[in-house]
Image 1 (cartoon, one colour):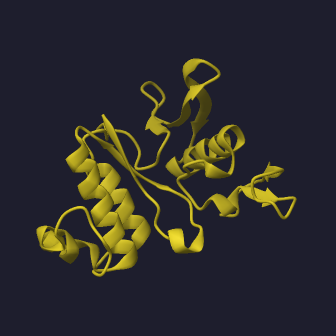
Image 2: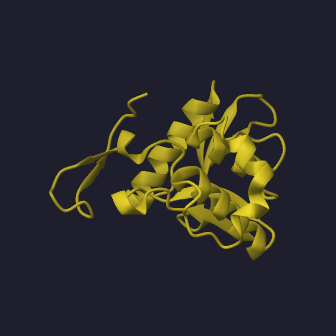
Image 3: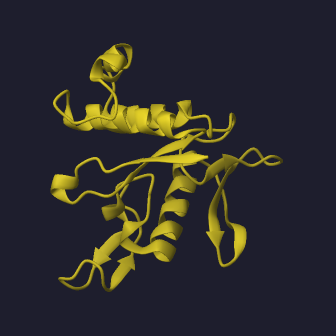
Amino acid sequence: MWLGFATPLPRHGADTVYLGAYTDEEQAAKAHDLAALKYWGPGVHTNFPPSLYEEELKTMKNLTKEDYILLLRRKSPGFTRGISKYRGVTRHHQEGRWEARIGRHSGAKYHYLGTYDTEEEAAVAYDRAAVLHRGPNAVTNFDISNYIKRKTKNPKTEITVCPPQM
C-alpha cells in the first residue's frame, strides 16, 4: 500500500498534506500531481503530463484546496467506506458516534482517543494526539498552527499542544 503525501507550499515552509493510501506507486504519484496542480497551478512540475488530468482540472476549479484534498482522500482505494473524511476518524460500530484513533503508538496497533458527537471534534482529538506524539511534523486534518504554540525561536524545540482555535 502506497501512501500519498504532498507538501502544498514548500516555498513557504508548509506542512505535509495526507492524500490517501493507494495500491500502487502510479496512483500515489497521480494523487500528488493533482494536489500540486490545485495548489500551484498549471506551471508546476508533475510526474505525468498535465493533459492527462483535463477532467480533474475541471472538477478542481469549483472546489477550495481543502475540499479538493478531502476529495482525493475519499477517492483513494485505502479509504474505507463508512469512515469519516478526516484522518484518524471513523464511525463507532455500536454507538454511531465518531471515534478517534491514532495508529502505531506505544507499540499498539491503534491508540483509542474516544468518541465524539461530530466528525470535526474527533478530527481535532486525532490532530492533538498526532502533534503530541509526533511533534511539529505531524500530519493533521486541520492547520497545525491550531495546535502548536512555539516557546522558542527554534521551531524544532519546545512545542506546546494547545486547544484548537476553531
